[in-house]
Image 1: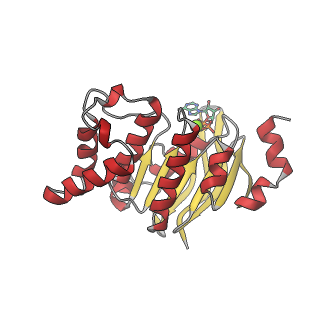
Image 2: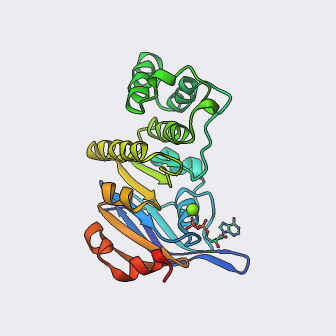
Amino acid sequence: MALVDVQGVTKRFGGLTAVSDVDLTVNAGEVHCLIGPNGAGKSTLFKLIVGLYPPTKGTILFDSIDITEERPFARVQRGMSIKMQAPSVFKELPVRQNIQIALQARFSGVQRDVEEQRLLALLNLAPDSGKLAGALSHGQQQWLEIGMALALRPQLLLLDEPTAGMSPEETFRTGELIKSFNAEGMTVLVVEHDMTFVRQIAQRVTVLHLGKIFARGSLETIIRDEKVAEIYLGK
Ligand code: ADP
Ligand code: MG
């Protein structure tokens, strides 16, 4: 069952076609990775799905409902939660308060405190919860932002390059975190560059190249596809 169904979506910026007639389905319950070289249109497609850009052409369905015209806030209320490519935590506030702000939309009272402790422990941020978010390493800030997205308990979690700036160990832990939330039923769409990470988490993969779908399939099919290797190596 498709949770997200992108149908014939195009996005032009003036004369530049960033996303061209793209069809993409994300099935309920899967971890789906969107990969492709720099400038392929991945972040643009992402922003189209969450409603930060209107498409030039095409339709986007969420849970079989046409959301093409909906604002981002309405999509969040439907169960989408996003972490953009550039980290945007509240740097001048303590880590704990960042989490509290994110939880506020969904939980109150004792339940909020319980969720706060659970998230801080999951993110390995409990020892640093009193630090200003801006004082964390880049990888930890990415983590904090993933935690803020998770705080909404979304049906669909969208992550744009979540492991950028993380050490291999942090990257691995992020993968395990994503898999544990997926095991509880969360659908995840990840834009990713790091193929080791893609191999760790992906069930299905879509490859975007020059704004178009280049290949799609199971993780096994895509990693054996020589044409995909070629666009990655720039041959
Ligand atoms: P990716 O995330 O795969 O690296 P992007 O979606 O960021 O690629 O960009 C795809 C293409 O669209 C690039 O050529 C980029 O320069 C262009 N682009 C992205 N956003 C904008 C924008 N807001 N205005 C103009 N061009 C843009
Ligand atoms: Mg990008």
